[in-house]
Image (tube, helix red, strand yellow):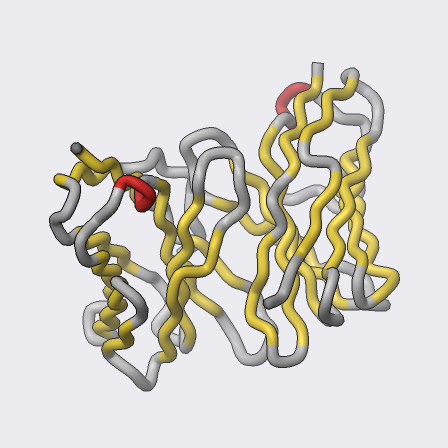
Length: 114
Length: 113
């Protein structure tokens, strides 16, 4: 079946620094990838949708200059949290879809900003 | 509409009993619905899906029911097992093709021995 790999699984960074999270589709070409954020005991909130080779579409209220998304190839999308602050601490999850494959989710990245 | 960060309700079920988890969706134009299971610290795992031209679909130990009239989905889990303990989310596909999946508020399923 379709597999999506997300890396790192956990990251701790200092306030003011930037963090990059990678999302890779391992056995299929992901024409579209999605990034979600999940706070404790809450649901997944869609942040943005990215299509390979084009700019990401951000959901209302998500700062595109803070959450940089790059989808440069059909197997890789990255989310960079710039100038991270403690309130950015969350669980970030990517999802990918393409061709006959449905929506496959990565295992998530736990970001802690100290 | 979009999930607004509601805290998760909990359903407690005796092991071996059937579980029914309900979900209300918001967009009458949604044509594809998915149930996901999420264990602590992990990403969502696909359980079962259903398209809007169906009202019932069965999988292994799971059944999804769709009532478009009242915009309601349910997930039935037969003979609930300890391994079914998790948070369950319904999600709706808004738009055609590979469009975005929006998650509902979720329900935590707890199994009593």
